[in-house]
Length: 264
Image (cartoon, rainbow, N blue to C red; front, side, top):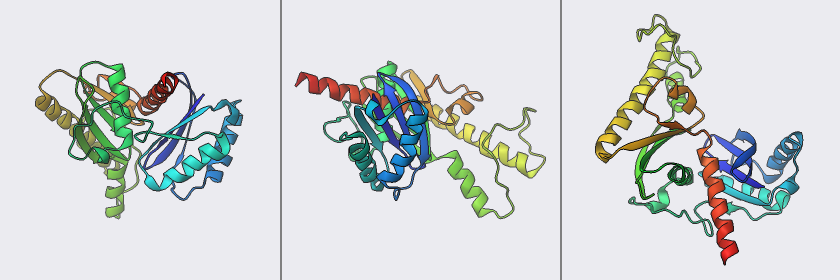
């Protein structure tokens, strides 16, 4: 089975994948100081609770946007799973798509992996919206070319900035405001829920409308990330929600590398 590791700015997600089916998924807060041994103590115990062992892993692939974290992840793969980790975007894991931007190497691995997975699943021009530490909007042409996109502050990041800068504002959960239809908050918490939630929906709807107008051709919008399902319930801008798009893209890249090695 494949151990896919998605190292994000907030969390590291580990998933055990058989074919393209996720058998188990676990996440831990991203900390570049965390050693391979610390990861192993945590992950091997979780595998055991799932009735699995390190011996079940025959390949490891990593998508990483935190450079300082990569070394310990690759040591984990080698020391505890006896595998040399494949790293998305580094040989032999080529993207397999053209990145048509000013600085191709600056495109985050997670954004490229999402683009690959979305293009594999859906035809035509695409916009992928990923809810992470940042919320990204990535444009993929019908031929699979990555054309660029938008990076906006993630909703949790925006909320943190608001609460940290205003001493009397309370910490609130990310959730839809009360269903009375009003956007006039009658107390501080309601006003914050309305501003954070509907403000974010308005930002997404506005940016998607501008992207559609610029692309001109019909566009399929795919949402991924932890908050995709919540927002999908309150806006019509998403055509599809794929919570595991990044993991699916990693599985697809690992399959391509394996096929290439068999042919060589």
